[in-house]
Amino acid sequence: MPKYGNYFVVEFRFPIQVDTVNTIQEALSIAGQICENQHGFKPDNWYARIFEYQTGTDEVGHVKEYFYNPHSATHREITKNIQYFNEMVHKGLSPDLKKNNKKIIKTLLEEN
Image 1 (spheres, rainbow, N blue to C red):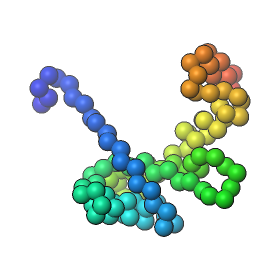
Image 2 (spheres, rainbow, N blue to C red; image 1 turned 60 degrees about the vertical axis):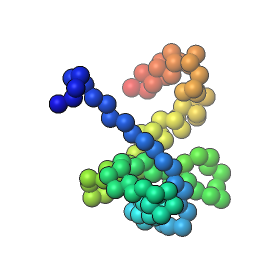
Image 3 (tube, one colour; image 1 turned 135 degrees about the horizontal axis):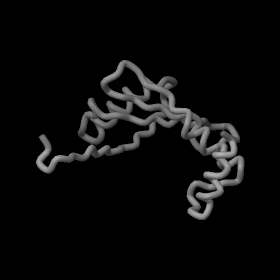
C-alpha cells in the first residue's frame, strides 16, 4: 500500500539508434544489447516506443511508430499520432502554437 494513498509511475526513455536491422524485434534486441554492453544496464522490463525512419525519400520525420510492452509477445503499430499530426500540417495548423487551439478544435469538430 502506498504511504500516502497515491503513487507515481515514472517512465525513463533512453534513445538508441539501430540502423543495421530490418525488423522491430531485431531492433529491440540490438538496442537491449547496446544498453547492456555500452551503458551498463539491461532494459528487460522496459516499455519501448520505436520510431521508424526512412532515408532517401522526401518524407520528413519518422514514418512509423510502434509500442512494445515487455509483458506481451509482440509490438503494435501506433497510427493515430502520425496521422493526426500529418493532417494538422496539411491543414496549416501547428500543435505548438497556443493561439491555434480554438482553430484546431473547430477544425477537428467539423470533420466529425
